[in-house]
Image (cartoon, rainbow, N blue to C red; front, side):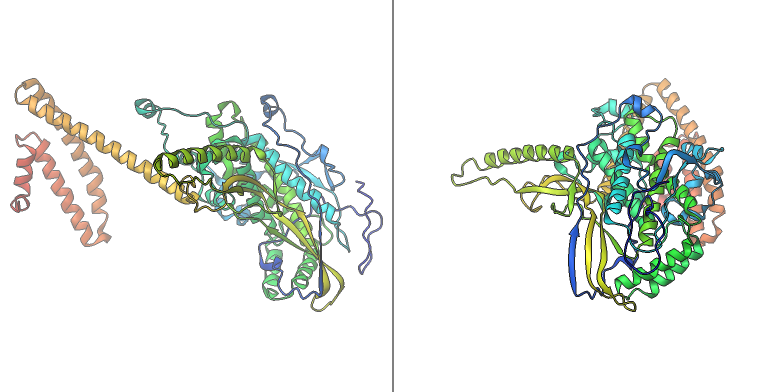
Length: 606
């Protein structure tokens, strides 16, 4: 494959003949302390910033015809050949099917260690049979010496971000969820509730997914709070992009060498730990030498595709509850198979893995960073979607106007009272993609310590975010509700639903008690009612006897290890059995008389 006419000059050692063909994607640094810019004893620092590619407008959801058609080729218009990716046509996988992959790859994400063994029928479709995901070809060669220009990193990192946005747009960004307006008996009949937070309980997301969402997003109470992140199309699409980006950062870019075997990773981890206090560039240079030794002239590590298969399956399992939530509220968008979904994730993960290998190959320092949700806008951020911000701005103006009217009504008699509208500004609501920076040395470098005359800082890509129209000072009056974390919000929703269910149980119990009391009163005057009530009590007594003898007693008898506690449980079981026999066993004793005869020593206290 012919690459661009880019030649790398300078540096010791021979260069490969002919134009340099860079890898399809270079990448970012790991979460190990390798990227910590400690002890950079440089004499001068120069900074350069490369412009980022701006996304023109916001792509709307694909029509139904495109959604159900064959997967779109997302790489033809992105200069795949120039980036070293041969994907037309894609080459079928040559390794074993996914079902034959060992679970040893689960260390990529401990939260999905059982993904390959999932009992979900849709996941089993991916792990059973002879179906195998399609693999892209990475034909480019790594440079023997020198460094790849900044423009390559910008193009490849931006390409990966666009691929993830396309993925989220295709499968999660169709429409807003239709409003559910049920109340009373109609809501109970359909099993739906309209309490706040119900959408999160319905989704049934895993704790790790909730943790990821809490790290990249914050609620905007004026547009629906946390619930709007799932129910509104634009926010849901951005949320998925941010989650996938966070997973890739954690499982791919933080890896010392994605796809490397366990012995190689052990060696890299030991070297990384032993040089934790070394100068930053010197430490990165040592790791680069070890990475080149492990690759031994190959483009990819030996276990690269096994790692890609495993991580793509784990991300599929992670996002499946959210995908099913979208399908439940938008039935027309239901997927017949997860193979296309998994294939798109497989391609994204493979490019991210290739990108991370390029980072580890380089002697430069690459660093990820991202703003915290709720931070004010900054020049290091790039706002990618006005849909969310415009909706937030309109809702904020409406909320401020309502607060102003309420304030004026409360102070109608005050002459000098003046309403001051709270100050608002753009603040980060969702972090879609982290910022990538590259640090390179300038001038002479000490071969022993790695200290250089200076360094060059290049911003490969700014943080990709979406803003909301938030308060400049959250403590201002009229902030519009509680700013609880996502964990607190979900926990509050669970408690609220539990209280409602217990209230429903108590309501039914009270209704049955009142009905039983009414039957008892009528039975004193109507023999047929008394006979009916007596027949019901006999059936209830039979059910209780069966429960005590078949369920309760065996459990208590097998609990000898409980010691004194087991005797208590047996005594309670005998008392219940006797009490049930007295009350409902056909004897003409009422409940009060039965309790008095059995527990006279208790009733005597009263």
